Image (cartoon, rainbow, N blue to C red; front, top):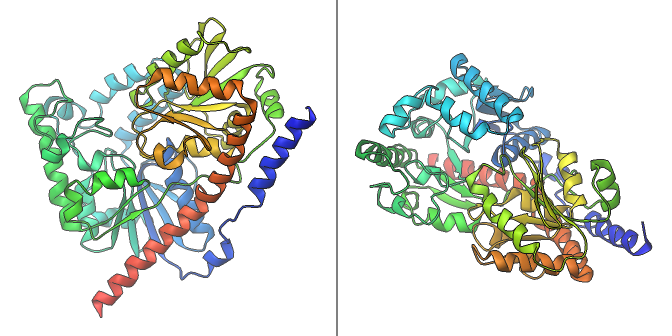
Length: 470
């Protein structure tokens, strides 16, 4: 490694190690709480990773915690699975397909029709759930909770009636990781705002009228049950909170909190680019642009078509070195456009391997236009990788334009390609942004900060509840 690159890596590491972090001893001084977390999976995507790490951190701080999920894939005893063998077999089968086949998206859609309630949903638009009584969940946890914290409820067991049941006996907090809770069926409705009008008629569905009515009834059901629970609402971004405050939740929630999702800074931190590339078998003398996400090629929310178009536009520019667009999270044959390759890398949960990819990259590219909070963006920045993304969603709160990355107007592919070109051809700008990205992530994107803020919220809710009793 030449001296300048060595100094740059050293600067990143010094900046990283000298930043402030939460003192775990301070967290251990808190009074012990009994906490139940509820989510669809324990390990799967970004939201699942956040919830699982919260559970682990609470346990480290001495709290009694249980993560109750519809489908468990880890072996951690802190995680308890709701038992339903028939659904479990189907979901594990889908999981295996997801791991080993490139056409998994089509196969999963076909198989889900034959899952529990799948045909009902196809024909009526209605969403049905298995568990409506919180007592079963409490029995699974094995203790009486002080608070119940719901996250993604899009599982076959979990639904709004469960929130209502929980709210009759316990304080309830809900973290929205997407917009499903305020729509009839959509995780991210894009430009559609029919959720303000009961999602009827649903423009996202090409189905016949009974299905459209069923979708609207889903939202009405959510409004009915959640209004009775009067939960506390949390979002990872101001962008999503602004949407929440324009939804039915604005009039029924007991309180609102914005808590950014953090990352594990022990794993995601600046590293030596040359060593990272050697470990991953990547060429040292090329430009690497990384994008990541589960099913990145087939997941419509990841907007892979925009990435492909950016690659084509960049191929027409005067980039001296070959460019590899690394797509971490999917399988497929490489695509070539002049001196540019789009290469696919299978999904992995190993955070140290993922961190190596971030460290090996020159730029991280996010082409999603509906990220409530881009976890991969935070991870990339923590590793000292500048980010280029669309100016939408939570990304506007993560990336400081011109300082630690570039934000471009939605769908402005030309501007996105030009921003990448600037970073690839201007060493000084790229390394300056890399340094600031790592510093910003260290200050604002620490999972321990996230956990500490949630614990503050729990204590505040419990204290408020105690005052009302007296």
